[in-house]
Image 1 (cartoon, rainbow, N blue to C red):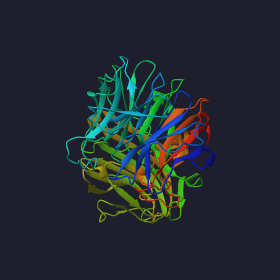
Image 2 (image 1 turned 90 degrees about the vertical axis):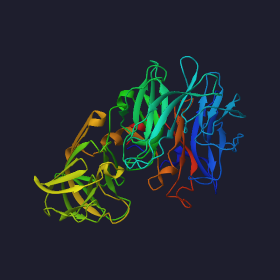
Image 3 (image 1 turned 120 degrees about the vertical axis):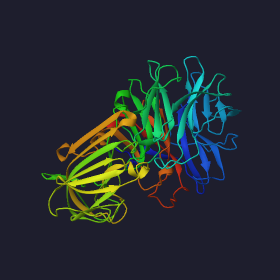
Image 4 (image 1 turned 135 degrees about the vertical axis):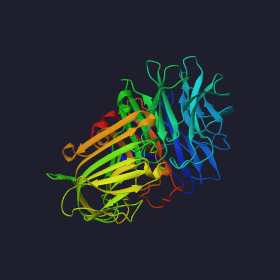
Length: 514
């Protein structure tokens, strides 16, 4: 994967202060070239005692930044910035209080935005009739569902006909029982079609989802799984018709990332995402893909495959051919209904540890896992060996993975993977998924490695502490992305209490580098 993470000259600290949790930025280039970034200042991520709006500006393309300016906002969450054709800037905010600037971000005048029934708003989008659109989400029903570990969400499109002062609900963009769809990013294509890219938040490695509207947001197409796994996308069109998306990468290796491609490529379906930081691990031999690492977090190898969306009705078959020569408790495994931890002699399921499946030591074992109706059946070399029960309506049943079960301790391994295949039938979504891989194909996550640009890695941070981003195009054609960053490898990091706002400059050429 091309990465700018270690290129210090590409990054800048926009705001970092002791005792402040600085997060959720967006950025825009004003009409005079000034970069304007809006974000939140709080004391911590969860239940902060304060969370106010902050604005900074840069007049040298992001190299240096002004002192913070505080528009008169008593509270704020995840501000977004829109630049209108006349140069006016609007900061929209989940606080239901918007701010307008007519002088390229120097001064701001606030006004109340009434009728915004949902939170975590998208950037403002102007409809063909001149009205304004945004999107937000909220939890509905109140009852937590085990399949998503939270109440269901509803993503709503909201419309204003008086330049943001009053809003009404226009349409439900997404509402799915087993998909926590939220934080939509909408953009208009030259054809007039509106695309919406949504975060999926059940933390089982579901991808982001895409939908479109051809009637200015009144109705939406069926949701389609995309090739990206992430949170809070910011999507926009490029001059050549492609899309640029920045987002929090929540695959197995966390960070702030960017992707460029066509709408068709974005909607091409799930792609395997992995974590393999050490360039020497895995390696490839004539026998297969060898994973060999000592205990610790520096050389972990694990891959997230397509999860089941609704295990109440889904069926899944996962086949693997693997030889394990050495493995700690967290060194090698397959996740199918639960983690099956593999050692040279046996395979033990987390959901039923008393059910140990013997393996043939010193040779490749052909493993087959079949899931249906809350039961996982296992075959070894064509012989049925075990059946266990798992919860058919629980988030823990949904992920499908192979590699290190937990990449933090007791994870030494020496194993060789020859081939993997996965087939999932989802009748609730009228979807069939099939993936076949052999070691001759190279790395299982080759698509993601070739096409996603890592702006900044933060694999050791807590999930909320990085990756909310916005981007804008510079006058010279390069891009500037503002995001919040935990910096978990840096002194003083405290999960959910420490984050700062940073920026990274990048270009289309960066996507081509390896």
